[in-house]
Image: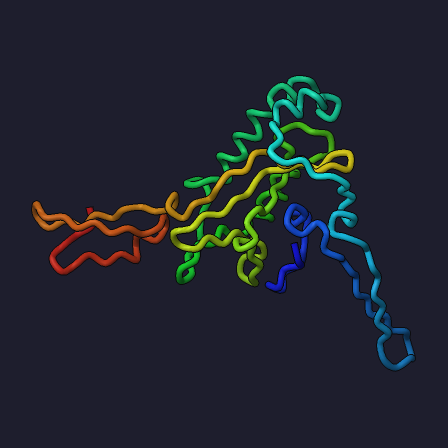
Length: 219
């Protein structure tokens, strides 16, 4: 896939989509007492090369992978629990456990990359120096903003596919994908006036934006 045009920097979470994109480092050098700056362009190779990924496996069953790679775990108990651990991480990074920011017709899951990095430091799944990360699988959902750093952006009525992943021995293992659906963040606010009720759909955390009609109160 061609390099994205959204202005964001490519990272390890982009290898599935943009692994063949050519990467360059641009370095400006200035010497003391000499006018001007000399710019150098260093060609790194592809994004996959820069992260030392030679192959990609998709839809990998995490427990099967752990059983075949027990030597990369702290101990055999962590290897035996790896599938359950990955599932628990997916639950942790799924609605309603993650917060959103609503801007116009787009729901942002802010700072997902930062959250995953913080999680990697605790290494809950017990791999030796291998942190579980994620891959963006829907290019239209990839978002960089000054406010959120790195986010998943979900249009109202749409969904975005992501997958937890792990890089080992030159191979990016991508576990089964799951979807973040805008519908899963919806909540219903009920306004009541005696026996009469009116219902309004909004998003979790934005119930305060719903204004009940005159004479109605939120239940």
